[in-house]
Image 1 (cartoon, rainbow, N blue to C red):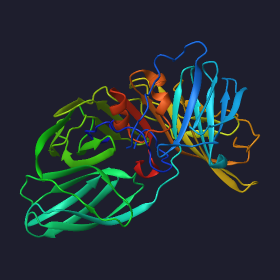
Image 2 (image 1 turned 135 degrees about the horizontal axis):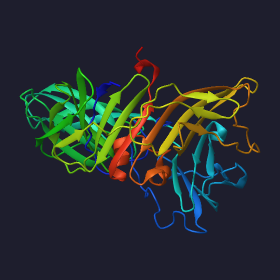
Image 3 (image 1 turned 90 degrees about the horizontal axis):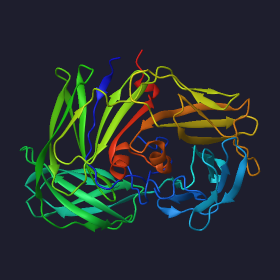
Image 4 (image 1 turned 120 degrees about the vertical axis):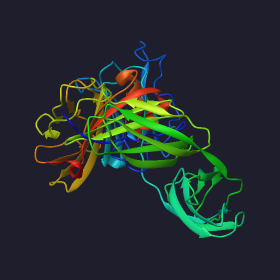
Length: 435
């Protein structure tokens, strides 16, 4: 089946989890992993506990209700997270862990857990906007200055002498106390330079002054072969630091004889490489990521992707199961994920439910969780809509992906924390569907 292709390739450094806000697409679309993806010494160890750690922008969240349940949904333990954001218990392999965030307005479930799991859950309650004056030296008499940071982008176009201070008002959202800046100076001559300023304190209304010199950029080529498409392809190169994604360059190029190539002027800062290639299809979009990949990068797209969705995911009210169908072609997925929106007309309240589990066929079933605090199980007359469904595959399989699957907001970021080739197939938003 031929699919319209947009490929994006990203060069990132130590950036993986830390989704901003309540991102409903935790694996696919940038953040930071501070903990191991897998406690290899503990997985399947007799008597080892299953532990969940709940954080909000990296800070532990206490008093979150957590249910540990066996595979048949029988209750092992009902607990609340401690002051360190943790809850744990000894349980058999194959059960589930469900956390009720925001008094049950947001439900998160891990299916198929194993003894030794160290589950990382980012609550992501959102952030605030800040603005301030950013002062940096001019590079040339006339230049366009894209202002990149690990917390957002701005732009300034000025006419003033090199070395004199430029003042630009920047607007950012959901920033930590310290971020990185990259000022790119482009005079239109084809050789942009960049000023890198790491670990800068930021606060609303407090002016920031950057110092330093502009350094040359270096060319890096991205090429894709065996593309099953015609038309154009979108290629993106990116850089990141431990504080997050810092810079992206993007080009749209024609696909010629199944191949596409682009060369980027990459700022000269140290980074670990990761690449992603994305294909947009009628019912689902496929993405492949790999790391580390410094310098030039080439991808053979022939066998890199997972089976495409052939039907739109549906929710069966009687069995509380999300189902879909897939093509036979493609690598076998390890993981399945879905996000639901539920509304009770009788109780006049709504809640969301995100669940991740092993890919045991194209389906995911919600556990029946206890109702002692609030009933979040979809009732027969409740309205249930599917926001998002995806499958994924990576080195180490579901065991390696499970601990961070409900905190990751970028596939290339996951590739940085978990080196190797990863692939995702995500159900396409309605506006991507083609009749």
